[in-house]
Structures are given as structure tokens and as C-alpha cells.
View 1 (cartoon, rainbow, N blue to C red):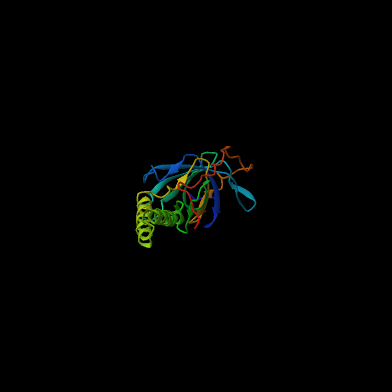
View 2 (view 1 turned 90 degrees about the vertical axis):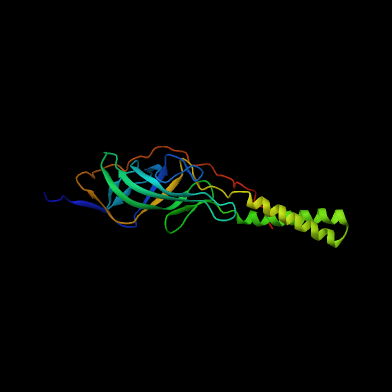
Length: 219
């Protein structure tokens, strides 16, 4: 049988998505499913190719929590399947390129979602501890030597606080928005890709703004 005409969605096409199930490095494991919905139609040659309200399913391929000494939390998500409103399903090969999570998450060139970095407050904790220790030492000994000892104690206490504190998790709350970018073209059966309406996505509230887990101390 001769294949029918196709609608090509080219490499590099951006597909705007909203997340239906929350994801966090606190509990995510490779193989866990993720469910998205398109929130804006994809137009090809002036026609609706992918309506808003289409579904996209994927999975977690890697999840790493932030270390207690260094590093940031990281999530890798693979987008596998696109399901159009008429139940027509096609394989999808896409990766996230940006995420609106309400927090400090970023997405690198490989599609890896990284949690907020807290190095500024790590350093500030040590400096603040050092200053506090110097004050205590100076009062106790009323001498330069006493201040030096106090500074050492303060630095050690501040560093211990940093080492015992895990960095922020990478989180995608329900309602997070994600831009998916096609890594290869996908071809839709033109006979099944017949939509006269741009579609309509579910009304999901966006995630609230999240404060950093640890206080940022300027210095």
C-alpha cells in the first residue's frame, strides 16, 4: 500500500506544554511517568497540526539530588508520545528547553533540568559564622589571640552547617510550563491530522513562586 500524504513537523519545532503531575528529585526515580498537555497550537503551512489540548507522555530518565558538599539537583526527562485529541498517537522525540516552575530551576543545552544553586548562602554562612566567632572570642579574651581563636571556631561552625545541609531539590510542581524542542522531524498522517479548531487546553493554575530553601545572606 502506498503511504498517504504526510504533515511534517520539522526539527527544532517548539511545543509549549503544561505539566499534570508534580515531579521532584526528592522522590523521582528513573522510569517514573510524566504527563503533559499542549497549551498552544502548532501551525504548519497555516493549518493546525497539533492542537492545544493534545497530550504528551514521557518518563524520568535520571534523577539526582543535590549533594551535601557540592553539586545541584538534576532531572532528565524524555518525551516519548504525542496523543492528538482524536486519539491519533505518534512517537515523539523531544527534550525540554525551558521550564517555568515558580522556583530557580534552569534547563541546560542537553535538556537537563537543574535545581537552584545555593553557593552564595553557603559562603555567607561561613563568613557570618566567622564574624560571630571573632566577636565572641574577642569578648572572652579581650585580646587579638582571643579574637583569632573565636574566628576559627566560628568558621568551623559555619562550615559544619554547610556540610550538613543538602542543597535545594529540583522541582516541577503541577502546572509548571515546559518548552519541548523536537530533536528530529515527526510525520503525521495527513488523513488523521485534520483539525479546524486550534483546540483548548485544560485550565491549570501555574505554580506559586517558591522561596529558596535556605536564606540568602548578602556579603
